[in-house]
Length: 130
Image (cartoon, rainbow, N blue to C red; front, side):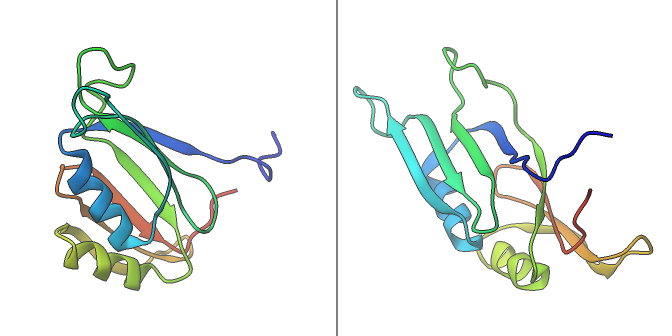
């Protein structure tokens, strides 16, 4: 078995409205690390990196023909957090729709899931794989 203790995952996807996605990510606890915009059209995000306080993060950009990640949405991600209830509540307050309310899992941990305003599926939980 591979040791994954030093592994950091940066989930990658494209979005239709990068500014709206950044507002939503900020509302649930992500922080902006870097955002690069198109020089001719500032509404187009060429590449963005947003970090999760517990490690890892996401990279995304505006869905466009010349992007390596065009057409990758909707996407799905699982976010480990010590307080998934608070993150789910913040996600809903920022416009997400509950897919699965918070539950205690038979395999351990607590979790629930939403879809963000772009239709991406996000699960928030305490269960730490590996």
